[in-house]
Every structure is written in C-alpha cells, then in structure tokens.
Length: 421
Ligand SMILES: [Zn+2]
Image (tube, rainbow, N blue to C red; front, side):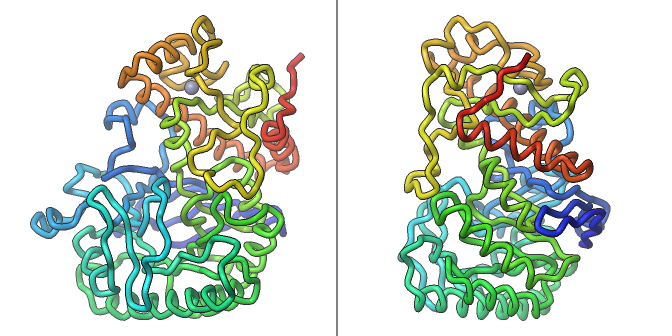
C-alpha cells in the first residue's frame, strides 16, 4: 500500500491515490475517500445486483470482526470467498461503526466487541486467530477505544494509549510469524481521548512501528466539540508520516464532520452514515454542488428549500449524547405526511436508480406500509448521494473550491439552504 499525494494544502486537506491495495496490489482508491460499509460482506438492504447499479463504488469493503467466526474456521478459505466477494479489497475492523459499543468491558489484556451473538471478549491471541480466519487484505490492530467521552480521566486515557501500543506490538509480533497473514497490511490505532499530550504521544509511538497506515479513534459525533476535534487531529497528523493513509475510525460520518477531518489531514472514512440515515426512513438531501453550471454538475443536486419549510430538523449541537440515531440537517424524513403527494424524485438531478424511477410519494407510501423495498430504494439513493459527496470533495480539493464546498455544507447544517434562481 502506498499513498501518492498529488496535492497537500497545509491545513486544507490532502488529495491523492492510495495504490497497491490488496494482496496482489492491483487495486487503488482516491483519497479523500470512503470504504464500502457492509454487514457480513453485504451492503444492508442491497443485493450484489442492486449494489452494482451504483457507479463508482469504493474498491475497499469493510467487514467487522465479531460476526463470523466458527463457520470461517471450518471453511478455511477466508471471508472473501465465503461471502462471494471477488473484486474488492477486504478491510477488517474491530467494531461495527453503526453499532453502539458499551464501555466498561476493557481490561489490560482484553477488549470486548458486540455482534449479533452478543458480547465477545478478545485477547490479542484470539484477535489474531480471528484475523487468520477472516484473511483480510488489511486490518487495524486491537485497541482500547473506551476513552472518547469527554469526561474520561487523564489516568484512564493514558492507560488506553499504553494498552493500545502494547496490543499493537503483540499484534505485529504475531502477524510477522503468521504465514496466513503474509502480505496483509496492518494499521495502528491512535488513541488519546481529548488530552492533547496523550494524542501526540500515541501518534508518535504508533508511527515508530512498522504499520501501513493509521486509524484515528475517538472522534465520533458527540465526543467533543468541533474546534477541539480539529485541533487534536491536526496535532496527531503532524506526527504521522505524509506517505501513509489516515482513517477516521468509528463514528465520523456526517458531511460537516468529514470536511473538518479532511481539512485536519484525514484521508479515509467509514461509510456507515448512509445506512443510519436509511434506517430512520430518511433520504440524504444536501447540496454539494460546486459547479458554476448546475446542468453540468453530474449528480450534484440543486436542492429546494423544503428542509427549511419542515421546520428545524433537530439541531446538532456538538455534544449530543444520542447522536448515532438522531436525524441530521442533511436529510429529509420521508415518513412525514407532506411527502405523500410529493411527486418529485428524492433529489432533483440525482442519477441513482431510485431517483430516476420513483418519487418521494412512492417511497413515503412504502415506508408507511412497512414495505421492504423502502429500505432498498433509500439505501441505493443514500449510498449514491454520499459517494457523490466524496467525489465533489476531491473535485473541490483539486480545483481550489474547498471554501465553496464548505460554505454549501455549513449552510445546509445551519439551515440556510440557498434558494436557486
Ligand atoms: Zn438518488
């Protein structure tokens, strides 16, 4: 894995291509970019056929460790073959970013993960045994990530950094001895809560180890305010080598937060956000159009002002506790009655299957009658819209229009959706 940066604008983000992905090194992906979020290798609600109606899918598929162990041990040929995934890079993460992770279950030697079967306690030995059965192309080391809440004590944060480094050393030792993991890349995890010195120490120490990249943990919505988050990420990325990618781990998904993280030097994001939006019956509907000529803006949609008319969506203070399930200002709630006779597509100009073939009124009808197709159509649109946002983000970085994009996104967030002429 090698990150080739084409543009680095100090304090304004990095544009580049991550090359040599996968064991054979034939895949690449543009950064800033997002991974493909899955449950057990499948994008929720979508079959492979419907998924592939979407253009420009991310080349990296994310799976979560907790879900598929005994059967994989028996199967022996790894998760990719088991799930029928062929032409993709497999990235294995410790936690599902869309599943809340209770705290209080970590010890010096173990971390806990939650899956459909409940809690599973992992030592490094067990964690590595699981990686050998999954056989991903890329995974991050075991980490103690329980320090994201702002009231975590300094002592607890220090302990989390120490443990995470110890886990990394143990993982690397086991990794180097393992034939099954030959050619697989390991990312180190940077912890440190909201304590500046601990963040820097974690970054410096992790960067000394032979890792392919870095996961920055603990910056999820609700963990801290945006200004502090940006300061901490900037301090961390300053300590990391330029040529290795940085992935925002666990919980950075909202467009405004993605933008702030990119400006602070992050490259990769998990794409659980469209799934969360789908699960609450909502459609992503925010404007990221930075083209002067909207007709040529591809899928970047001009939006109407109906979000304003709907009254304030729940305002997103930075410290919301229940932020994982709250509606954000970037979406519309299609269950609302006023969509029952709204015959427009979800987003004007969107080229996804849903917007080309259906109207808001139809999706509203599917939602209120609990039809499974509602989730399918919403997931198609939300995934397409979110991935198009990342395209717009790269385009903005390449053409010095990041300020314009930021203005668009922040006015969406703050409820000042612009009226088009
Ligand atoms: Zn659409």
